[in-house]
Amino acid sequence: MGCRMIRFVIILPLIVVTWLLLVKVVSDLRKANIDWTGVATFVGFIVLAFWLRHVTGMG
Image (cartoon, rainbow, N blue to C red; front, side, top):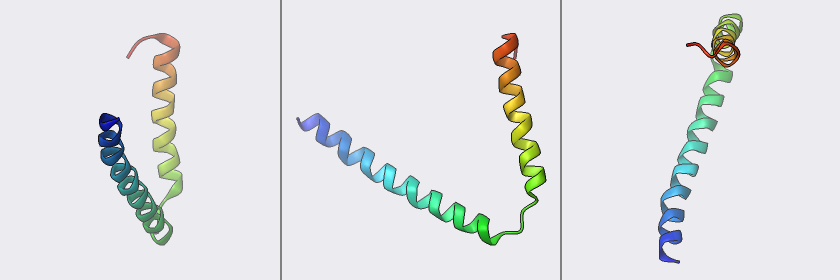
C-alpha cells in the first residue's frame, strides 16, 4: 500500500504541472501570430516520415 501512495504522490504533481504548462502554451498560441501553413507543413513531413518508416521498414 505504501508503494502505491508514493507513486501517487510523485505522479499527481507531474500531471498537474503538465496540465498547467499545456494550458499556458495553448493560451500563448492563441495570442501569437503564427503561420499555420508552415506549422501544418512541418507536422505533415513528420507524419509522412513516420508513415514511410512504418510502411517500408527503413529509416
